[in-house]
Length: 356
Ligand SMILES: Cc1ncc(COP(=O)(O)O)c(C=O)c1O
Image (cartoon, rainbow, N blue to C red; front, side, top):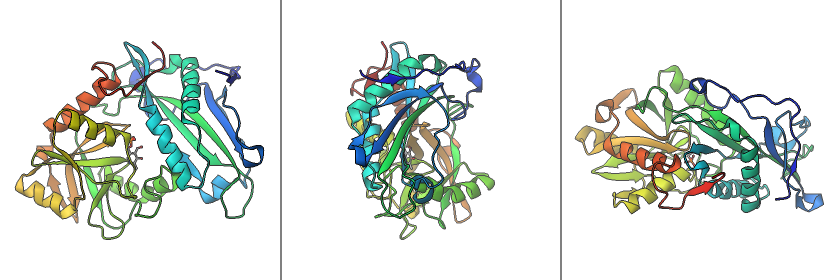
């Protein structure tokens, strides 16, 4: 494809010790970069250039009014070459987020083809050890230098890459979560279903307080009644009740996770009972007490499945499945990571090959 590539003069080497890979702290030598200007008819061509300072003006719209949308996906090194998992779903969601934030959409196929070129250039940065990946962060921001409060007319889009270690360094272990009944992350009619910076800013205070109290994540309730389960941290939430996987429906305040969608499709394929329905915190607690609720887990690109070992609500802690990972979470984790790392056949056609 016709893609301008400007190589970095000083090339840094990928980290050699993959056991020390964390998350989001090292970046590859190059990034993908695009500019949008309404006056010039929209998006200009994609370009690969050295990773570096963007040079936004202090008046740049994103710094004041938060027109920022982003995505998160991973490139996996497998026996069959470098692979992406459902990347078009991420780019389609980027477009949906952009529409909600009054930002321009982008051609999904063109963006994917450009990303593949960047990944081929940075191939050496895709780690090989079990559970590692190259994390991909596309981000679009308004950069018109103008303080009037209206949608910007200029944007930039960049994709940066960061080698990342396994999410579960000490193994696939359950976490403790705190039900948040004061702060809210999002509400119906707001921007919860868009992957936009403000939602994450709104979540920081609660997460910070939860971590200080010894919990890993916040379990979010709905913004109106603080009654219905929404998400856990930056993941979608699921419970296993009477053998059925239950996840809250997408009604505007919840991000439409690609892991969530894939898990529902896996359940359907393997005839595992699953439902998208509203579930209250009271129903969850009653279920734990009666034994009908046997598992709880978060679903998202970072962890794939994050089992929940206990839920604390109004100062009372309820332990789930003796703080052990349950069979449904284990099965779903193995089905999904099996496809991603090429250990299981891609029966759903979810894999996008980057190199063979
Ligand atoms: C708020 C929120 N919910 C859910 C998810 C899970 O989405 P996905 O499975 O597409 O990573 C994410 C992760 O991006 C998120 O930020």
